[in-house]
Image 1 (cartoon, rainbow, N blue to C red):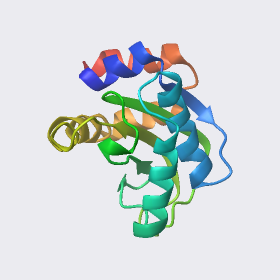
Image 2: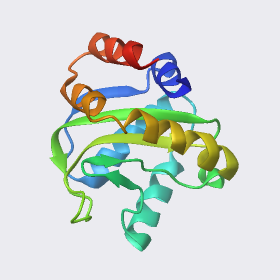
Image 3: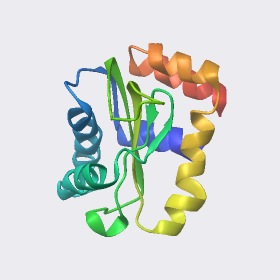
Image 4: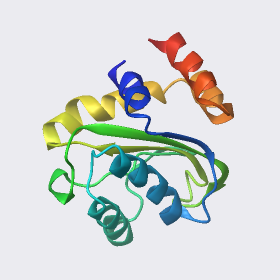
Amino acid sequence: MELTKQLLAMDAIQLQAEAADWKEAVRIGVDLLVKADAVEPRYYDAIVNMTTELGPWYILAPGMAMPHGRPEEGVKKNSFALVTLKTPVNFGDPDNDPVDILVTLAATDAKTMNESSIVEVVTLLGDDDTVARIRAAQTRAELEAIFATIE
């Protein structure tokens, strides 16, 4: 799966992070992508502004979110960041709050986002056992072992 290889190669992973609220949780993922030179810092503001305007439309399922903005809002290259939270936070989605797994997505074009990137994230997070193991992972080595079983 390209998603897991890319996460490991870019080192865009933070496990058991602390976030006071949804904005801080989104910031952690975007900061990982900024550090990897995949997005510009303004990508964070774009996601927050869109969420404030439209609500948390990127919530995938209970406990899982895929925050992202539009390609023209500071995306430099296709990328993902994975963040798990020690303590889940609310995004304002009563059916799916609280959230403790975020896969921050950046895509250079809408076609890539819709046809491959979102599919990869949904595939990764579509298996309850895999999700439980990702939630519990404390180290990169544990995450690598999980990813190895789904390749």
